[in-house]
Length: 353
DNA sequence: TATGCGTGGAG
DNA sequence: TCTCCAAGCAT
View: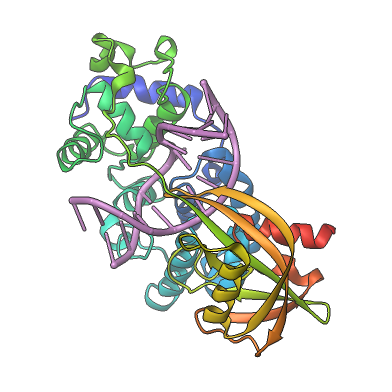
């Protein structure tokens, strides 16, 4: 049986729900795509990607029939590229095993690659009206404050408590609205810092606020320091073509293209590093010429400073020893190869200059 | 279960 | 410039 705060929440949602592109869709596929894109990604970032994606792959069948390279290109810039690869593979599974129809219950949804407990609950409740709970970062924060959850965030104890709270207050028949209302509340009012309690419809019920502890919930564990690495990359040109290397399909930026190179070892000179990396990865000897540019980038778990150099092959024909594939590409085609942020910046400079 | 996996916005 | 962290999942 839902608690009293639920009525207040649903009333607030009726008046303040954000008008988001995927909320206008009746198609469960649209809800699914939006939920995958929204994993660890803010709404404002997702909106233009969602619009382009739905225009390019309007149905599950269209997505299933696309090439992985086209799928990765459509995802370029969103990050966490395994989401795109899993969504693509899941679409092919739905075509082959479910007659092209997305399953409706959380358990069956959860069998699709890339669909975990949160996404299964979100899609089942929003797209199919199932009475399924969902727990994302927003809902974690809202419920942690509402019920003053003091167990450390993401600990097994707090996860059990929060999933249980999400489920036991669920209003039957209105789970989709309830889940989205909690998420909108978390994104618009119950923010990580400076929550706007003055406008919160649940302020009277909030147990953390009653003690002035709302900003200390959820309780966050200290994070380990982030390592900083230095890498090199080679812009290798020959006969007007540029050498691109495809990263292994699994792992960081899997399946994306890059300018080959690698990590500088302890005390190693930059050109020495680059010649070694190209020898190991491509089996060729290069001459390292003028510096091309220095690029800095922050990933989730480390920071990178990349030194790019103009290079030429001296001996040996490059072949994909540690890469998934190699390609000599004309400048004008660099746009067609899906790349991560740093390599796209290098490619852009090659196009402009 | 602890860790790897991108990028951008906000403060 | 730096830190935090966002509609998590897979292994």
